[in-house]
Image 1 (cartoon, rainbow, N blue to C red):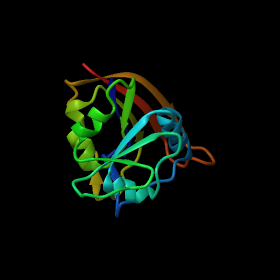
Image 2 (tube, helix red, strand yellow; image 1 turned 135 degrees about the vertical axis):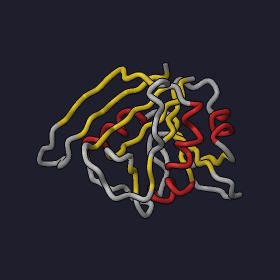
Image 3 (cartoon, rainbow, N blue to C red; image 1 turned 90 degrees about the horizontal axis):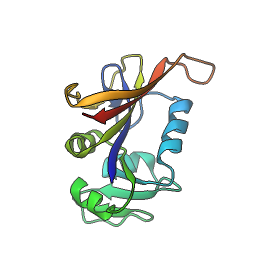
Image 4 (cartoon, rainbow, N blue to C red; image 1 turned 90 degrees about the vertical axis):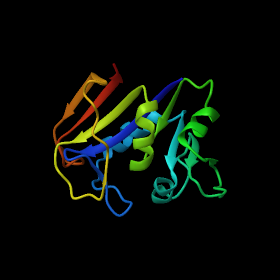
Length: 160
């Protein structure tokens, strides 16, 4: 099984503020949907609450220490427990938030990274990656357009 992270960050690694996204980038939302549809997505409780519902056409697993039931989702007590539930799948996606990303990086094989070429004022950040551990295998660069007002790149990183 390939464990992948999918994340969009600002140049300064910001990923959110007040449990919300910092930008509206329709092409990145489409990219996220295209990459994750048909797969399992694993997210923390706060990320689930910010989304507000299970992501359609995906198996949703929410990681939380709380004893809760979430309609349309499975609940796991840790990233490791969530990954165990996915044994036999080809690729699973860690979709946030920051605490979950930090815990998942050592367990991750691939990162689908969108970098928005601008700094944002955030309160939540994606951890710095060790360049000795990751190699860039794909990159697509995009200029701003009428729907996507920032320059951004889709980057795929593989563990060395």
